[in-house]
Image (cartoon, rainbow, N blue to C red):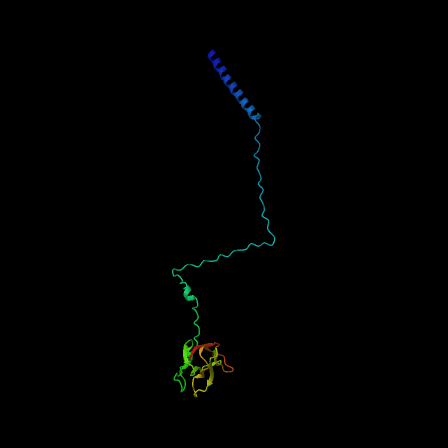
Length: 202
């Protein structure tokens, strides 16, 4: 009987302990502060503002031409440049006979320009310039010789002047020739200079 009484007393002690423990737990749960609901932060969303009058422009994609294996040859700079122009050749006088007529020491022709001739005093020579040009009257400076036009044979391709000495010394004979242009025709414009030196010796 004593053992039974001890068993029951111990059992009630355990039950009392469990009830006390449960009451403690309930008090703690009731006294604890209620958890605050999580505050959600609203994120402001910016609304795109359309700009008046602005229309989006679509950019067209330009296709890139495919490279071929054959290279295009480049032009040679030297061949692309125009070559220097060739100056027009000055017409030469037709060949004339240099056989001196009677009483003339020698004949000076257009081909003799720039040359020097010696003429004895008291003698004469002849100047012949090409007939394909219009020549100015030859002038001697200083005037130690006289130049006078001479008639030429029919069909002769030159103009002639007789050179007659008037005193000793050295003189320069000059004349200029220009193209003979017929009326109503266009011809080249150039000037040919003739110059010869005559040394008159006693």
